[in-house]
Amino acid sequence: MADTGVVSRWTSLAPYLLSVLRIVAAFLFMLHGTAKLFAFPRAAMPDGSTVALASQLGIAGALEVVGGALLLVGLFTRPVAFVLSGQMAFAYFLAHAARSFWPTLNGGEPAVLYCFLWLYISAAGPGPWSLDALLGGSRGRSRAAR
Image 1: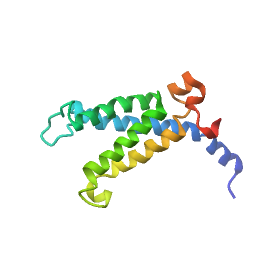
Image 2: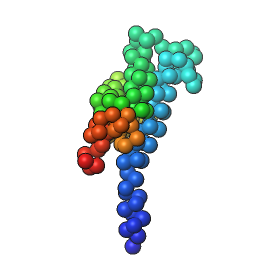
Image 3: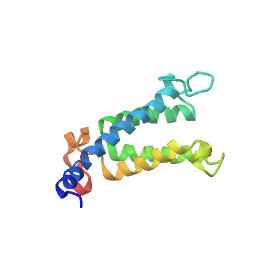
């Protein structure tokens, strides 16, 4: 049988691990946008170019960079995560689903994963390590922590 002290200590870390999950995922998400807009750390386009800001991919890149930055610091987390979840659902059905039913075959795994991750973050909140928690009290806490 598990030591309840160890289990309770581990579960008490959940809010902090939520913050870590949000921070790491937001950083990786931002890289998708910087690849589209700035060809950094590598170009997203096969020919090595960047996308036009006024294009569909440019708007997606801007959402990924700006939204990812806001999620990284945990500011306006719930609405931003909700919008980005919708963006990823839209991206999946627009760019991936027509290629194949299976995400592993159509290249849509990241879009599906980000969609549901941001949906979860929009409901769970940013965790304690966020500007929302620092500035707004209850904005940064999950319902379970209230």
